[in-house]
Amino acid sequence: APEYYLPLRMLGSQFHAGMDGKSAAVDIFELLALQGPVMTSGAAPLARQQQIGLEFREVYADYQQGARPALAGVSFTLEAGQHLAVVGPSGAGKSTLASLLLNFLAPTAGEILVNGLVLRTLCASDWLQQVAFVPQRPHLFQGSVADNIRLARPDASLAEVVAATKAAGAHDFIMRLPSGYDTPVGEGGRGISGGERQRMAIARAFLQNAPLVILDEAAKGLDVKSQVALDTALSRLLAGRTAIIIAHRITTVRQADKIMVLNAGQIAEAGTHAELLAKNGIYSRLVAASQAREVAHD
Ligand code: ATP
Image (cartoon, rainbow, N blue to C red; front, side, top):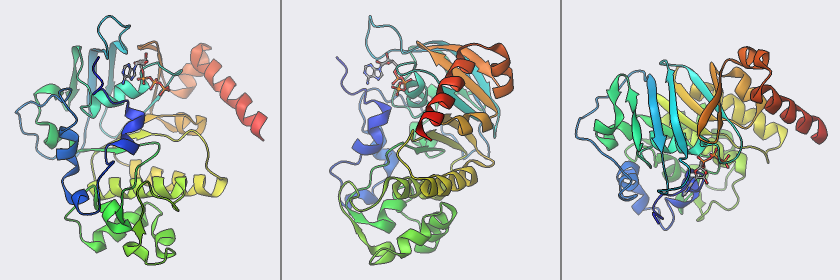
């Protein structure tokens, strides 16, 4: 069994495990390239893209031979600067879609095109430098706060780190830490709350300044104030960039340019919020269920 297919939701917390502050200064993309034989890397260099448009053409993905494919014939296009919210029940294939774009997994059939270029032919490190991944539970490693943010670009100056954390709404809480940017963060980031941790991951993404953002939205667990700070930072990050959002909150979904409902590896419905509500199908049932949950929690 291919254990090296690490579930996406675990990557945020696992792929830096065991790193100390010093070794963290290595290129994160080299690290990702060490993930194992699932990495497919073509030879074609990819110059820095100002904007990224995506196309999935009949994409299939499998973790295990013989099992139901995690994705089966998924096709869509996303124009440069558009935001796609991906929703659907557990196991629908949402994380798999993101894993394909992050080169953790290669399609078993079909093609993914990036600005018209076939993804599997592109040099993986060139590509991954242009994709910022904001996981649900970003991992912090042992090292200073500044080093934790520099992970996205080890050569960044302190001024660049500060600019990124300000944009991410993380500067103020960092300044309140005992030694500010030099404060040591313990392995796993003890003492830093979930919301603060996510804003640090957003700061990493600002520093990386990638034209494509993949966001695995946190489902719950933040107080209202942290949620507002996070929303502000995220909308700033996503402005002008192409984004794929594994969405858990109805407000996020409603704001997206396109919504895709995945079910059992296939696109059940796709369109805008209004279009999908009018269909009165699986999406409107998901919305009704999430509203019922919100009311229940009030
Ligand atoms: P969730 O909302 O629970 O995160 P999801 O929509 O992201 O679910 P995926 O994680 O993409 O769904 O899973 C799609 C299918 O692939 C499921 O049948 C799942 O069991 C399977 N799968 C996902 N990750 C792995 C893995 N690492 N190894 C084997 N099968 C996997």
